[in-house]
Image (cartoon, rainbow, N blue to C red):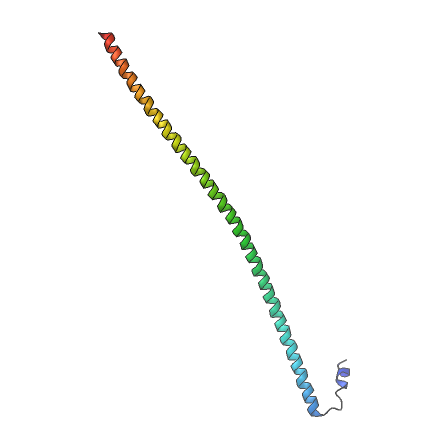
Length: 120
């Protein structure tokens, strides 16, 4: 088949043939260059897609971490409120204990006084 492609060149001057050869070489060179650039483009597109996926994954992870952080902050607030309530309840109970302890001491003194009176 290549002989048919070359047939049209028969009878052309050597200078024209030389120019045709140069142009064909240039076409081949440009085809190779185009293929290389196409490969580079495909490689860059693949890398871009990979980076886009990575960014998307990081955004998702960031959103998850933000939600988790918010949840933990709410839990901390809840625990802080519970701690304050327990602390207040403890103060109330200690106050009641002190009052009852005072009453107990007063009752003991009354009992001692009454026992003293009974002994007399």
